[in-house]
Amino acid sequence: MMKIQILTLFPEMFTGVFGSSIIKKAQEKNIVDIDIINFRDFSTNKHKTVDDYPYGGGNGMVLKPEPIFSAVESIVGYQDSRIFMLSPQGQTFTQKKAEELSNEQQLIFICGHYEGFDERIREHLVTEELSIGDFVLTGGELAAMVVVDSLVRLLPGVLGNEASAETDSFTSDLLEYPQYTRPESFRGWQVPEVLISGHHKNIVEWRRKESLKRTHNRRPDLLKKAKLDIKDQQFLDTLD
Image (tube, rainbow, N blue to C red):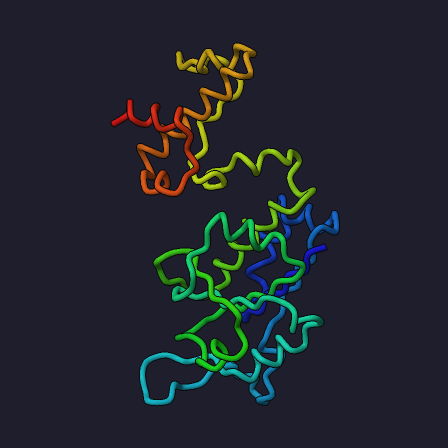
């Protein structure tokens, strides 16, 4: 069972997301154990403060090192765990990173707030920093939810159909092909004939071409690192 600990000042934010849908079921199946830790509980100040003014002046407040170090050090096995700071300065989170993290036994995520972290947290406690994009949030909670949702669905036994994760966009460095379901005709719009033909080989080829076409049109940058064979390249040449 994977263990995930999330340090935050706002544990109530996680209730709806982690208490619903796929993540809820994964916890009920004992595939993952998610523990939300309020690091304010580790403040030794009588007012339970976790932040203070920055040395050298400046706007905002900075998270103090003591409560965060103490909260992490209270976690069993933290010494062997990867410890992540959610930060816009971090490595951009990708599907490949989600696949990598899904193989870990324990992960710890620290959600920032206010103006940022005391640098000693970054230098002496955190092992890695993650960002979900080039924008700034009010805190790391939403980013932590995104990362955890992305990696938990990859754990064996979480999804009803294990193959469904294998065809996700970005898993093969291509965007996913179009999907259709009943009715076969809706307002005059038809499901592509190949999908109802029952010809498996033709369906596979159609889906591959549609993935290539969609990636070419929407995210051509992904094609530079995608694994393409001669047939793929020949098809892409017809699109230019």
